[in-house]
Length: 309
Image (cartoon, rainbow, N blue to C red; front, side, top):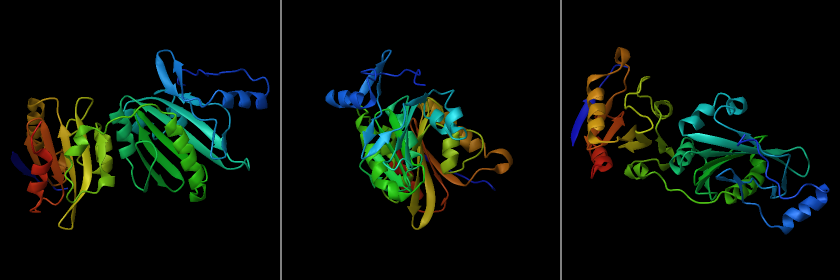
């Protein structure tokens, strides 16, 4: 393994599935209960979850709204890019009201292109309290996020109040229960060495913009991230010195070697690169950003790259 020190100066188809036409609101509810829980529905050749009608005393207000990669901007303009960066296919949204008819909980369930994409969106912001929802959940300030299979869920109280905690968790667990199947955490994530690592900071990604949101490495795509190039980043604390570890997997050794050469030769416009140490082993490239003089850096890189790829 070769080490290099680099310094610089600086709507789901808008289709509604129904079991019965309403013969009266109360009678319809009785029929739905008698038929048992609705957990999925077929839309064309695709099976998608049906969001629950009620959970924990919270009742759905109206039907689901469905957004695709184009219409999503009309719903969450300004943040849709994050979901699209992880391969968003559609978003199913539903609102729930409490018995008082005033408080609301909003559910947004995103179908991603793969379980890796769902885990990636979830890992983008894991600050908060770990909760047992789906395959991994975090709760903070009235907001729950979780992932399961190829789906990422966001459940929040419109008042942003922790007083709605139980309602948010009840609705979130019901929604997660409507999602069939599980997914695997991307194998690259397991490359992150345990020592000095903040597990809640680990983020899986394929987008340079997402990487820069966690640690800035330059305005251009220094590591060549994209559909065929995946990465993971996390905070490490080496001898009380904070830094970030980045591990990148390329399609082959030649692509990784080209990326290593690019980093070696290009310190960015006007020298706008942070200090970093990099290492490569086969198709894997790793970098420690910050703490370049720390004696633990080489051991960290060797642990991340051990065995190659």
